[in-house]
Length: 160
Image (cartoon, rainbow, N blue to C red; front, side, top):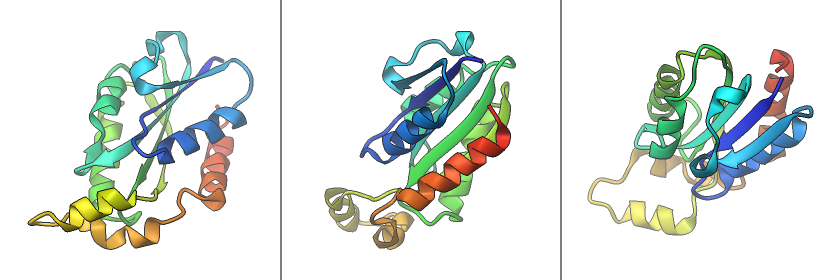
């Protein structure tokens, strides 16, 4: 089975998860940023990672998720500044599932990711600050080793 790890990462959080996942997978694997990713047709297992923007997967990841076909086993993973069970995150993960629905979703993982201070400051200065801003402090230091272990355990349990 050929495996492909594709990720979109604005701050390095999702890339960190993608690299850990790539290192964990058995041979016959490749990893690419989403903008450089090949057509998924030659792969049977595809892990797609993204960051969440306005309650949705980031735009580049959304375009790639549309390429998934019935021939693919899919693992979705994401990082975000909001709390894990927030409505924004639930909405984004549902949208990712819907975009990749032609494939067989084998697992889904998401965790908080540290929000850069300049992004926090920019959000604070908005007339209507985003909901995730209240959660940004708790996201510091994430994804951490525990977040990575949880993701890899989930991947191991699905046996790609």
